[in-house]
Amino acid sequence: MRISLYAACLLFGCLVSVAGAQSLRTVALSGNAAPGTNGNVNFSGFGFGFGAPVLNDAGQTAFRGFLTGDEVSASNNSGIWSEGGGDGLALVARAENVAPETDGARFSSSEFGTPVLNNAGQTAFFGIVQQNTEASNHNRAGIWSEGGGLGLALAARAGNVAPETGGANFSYFGFGIIPPLNNAGQLAFIGSLTGTGVDFFNDRGIWSGGSTGLTLVARAGNIAPNTGGANFASNQNFSTPAFNDAGQTAFFARLTGTGVSSGNDVGIWSEGGDAGLTLVARKGGVAPGTGGANFSFGGFSFDALVLNDAGQTAFTGFFTGTGGNSRNGSGVWSEGGGAGLTLVTRRGFVAPESNGAFFADFTRNTALVLNGAGQTAFIGRLIGTGVDLNNNSGIWSEAGGTGLGLVALEGNVAPETGGANFGDFSNSTPVLNGEGQVAFFGRLTGTEVDSDNDRGIWAEDPSGILKLIARTGDMLDVDDGPGTDFRTISGLSFAGETGNEDGRPSGFNNSGQLAFLATFTDGTSGVFVSNLVAIPEPSTLLLGAFAAAWMLVGKRRQSVG
Image (cartoon, rainbow, N blue to C red):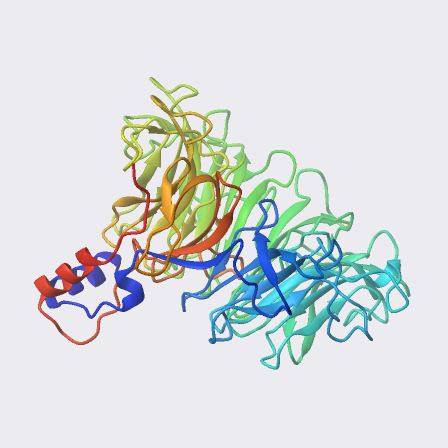
């Protein structure tokens, strides 16, 4: 699909928009005025550790920012901004402003979670309100959303009644929670419970819903479907759910009760089928494609669960038994092919384009993503002849249309870096968009690489060729006008680990636009959107040569030197 769209533009020509002709757009810059604030108030930064900017298919961003200026103090110096309203960047919520539907309680500073942004331009986020006469310690946490279409509203709050629990109240949602938000404005989240009828065995659950109300998806102590009467266990043993546009969730959970032992106490459930919540895979069950081995090992047994709008899941997991030993005991499974759960690859299989190395591991520090076409991309580790600590990880994708293919390999030359090599991918954050393009944050090693220039963001163009979006140590022109303002990048942040249909934050949309946060050596920082690998929108037919020339003259505000 990605190749055909690109080829169509080359053959017939595309009307390139002004935004498409420019390769970089500055959304917000420290030192510039912060919208929605009174007086002389500017952005002071955007804060690493508090989430990278997120991006929707309309090219709109949302992010958390920090403030400086008139009457700015530690109690009101942070907020969330979004372009989702369609009228440019606007304030969604600010510390010390009244939090909707809280009887006057005010948002607390430094405690906004990373926002999620859907294609309708709506945000959702976790927040804390200040402890005062309107809020005591038991009801400070909440989740707010614009998903109802009527502005920012409270979705759930500690101290409020939790639906379908017989009168129990929410007690907390977990600090830093990022509630998945779908394009219908619905969200999903894990909540802890307190109050009537609540004990250690039923004090946690998963809810989903929108403006018409929340529905209980699963609760500790309730019967887990397709388990012969076992119950969902508590002790914080639900994973954060994936959530698609159909309002369906998928999650891991532990089990307790009838017939449960250490050999079958973990499973994956999904609402993606036509029969409501059903079991997808369970520890102790047969692992497809393994010749009869069973899902097993310690811990959760499964990892990196993802979901798309077709209700298909994908995950990584361990297995043991027939065909499952120290050489081939972990793998990647997916329902993306449309024929039920199937094996994508496993430990001991040859890794494509790796000089004959074998896959070794997919479940430690691994990011797996699934897009709307049912294609997966993931980080894998390698073993075999010639494999050492300098070349034992990489990113692979099914999006090329010919099966599993290599995107980037540790030890291989990283494009547009002057000969530097990709380093370890264990902390990378890939995104696989709907057109099959992969983007990721990566590290570098090799000649002339040091701590000042060893990080970057890469993305595939529409034909599958990797392009460098930004690299530390390089210079970026942050001026959107005809002038120039070059600053040296000291840090980068990118929102990854999604296939853009699981409700999770994404920095890479289905048009190939990429949002990132950059900090600079002069202490400034900014939020940017790159169009370098964006897929042109076919429009009025123009001569192919004219369209190509137009793209070439577009000012490339990218890395230089």
